[in-house]
Amino acid sequence: MKFTALLVFSLSLMVSTNTNATLISTLGGVDEFIASTTLANSGDNAELSWVRDILQDQSITLDEKYNSSGSDWSLVTNEADVYSTALINTPGYFLLKFGVGQTGVNSHFLFKNVGDMAFGVIDFSLAGIVPNGKKFTIDRISHVDEFTATPPQTSIPEPMTISLFALGVLGLARRKRLIN
Image 1 (spheres, rainbow, N blue to C red):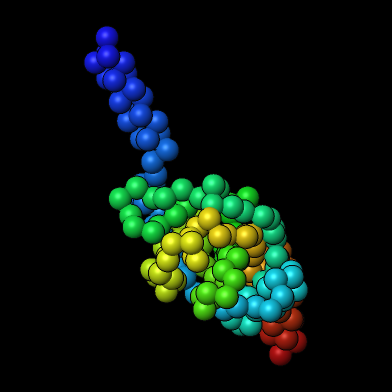
Image 2 (cartoon, rainbow, N blue to C red; image 1 turned 30 degrees about the horizontal axis):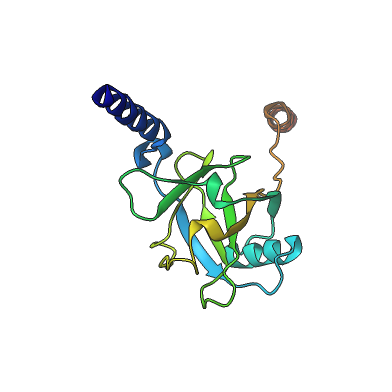
């Protein structure tokens, strides 16, 4: 009887572990780390301004800002210190803010979203972070900002407008030929 109960418990543990497992290949890879800093103010304007300066693109807009916690993130299977989470939108860039206190570690980290755009996938080592117990872990995450780069609007002439212009030029050329 004890063996059967132990077997059932072991199998249920294996099944529940595998259903929560995420492979890096299903996420499309690790998102590209761009920069990190510690901002004196974590307000929307300060974070947006820093992202625009780093990317040198004033068309960047803040799409979404929401609180996050370590429980929102999953350790990626077979990867050391690589975590993933589902994002609200499919942003081109996202910023993570960690509550690090006076640890000497930057608190704001900017990533370019690559692979599956619905997920944020971060690798602490690529961002220059060495998790050190209580001082810096995924549990210290405060919030996530999602950003989109909106290219400037460019007017594209309609094909009909170009065709009409071409017909006008042909008409003028034909008229000039008839006069001469």
